[in-house]
Length: 145
Image 1 (cartoon, rainbow, N blue to C red):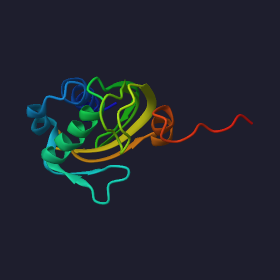
Image 2: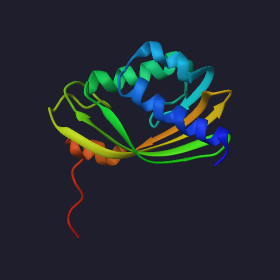
Image 3: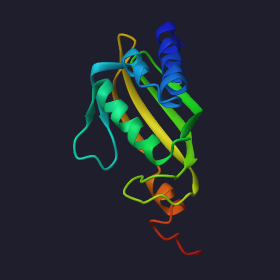
């Protein structure tokens, strides 16, 4: 693994531990380019820059203040990082259009990041929305086969 690949891996590890998992909005600009584009499931347009990422994290923390991501696997090269996470939290406020249920949820999430100059310039985030919405009671569970 090249030095740049290792730096990119560490960037995403720090991005998760120091920004995403803490909700420290001041940290967004440290990790996210002002030109960054974030593709979020269900959003008609991508979010942009540190402010867009802060809005996303704020929405998630409003619905689940204890939300957190655990990196399960990470693969990095000189321009991209792919990460598989376990995302979990307690649903105490509106989240994804679902009123608070008090339910705990835990689901797989994946993120595919592009990195330039030591900052994230693009992300495609892919949480397992079906699993989350099922756990919150918004979608009935699949019948047993």
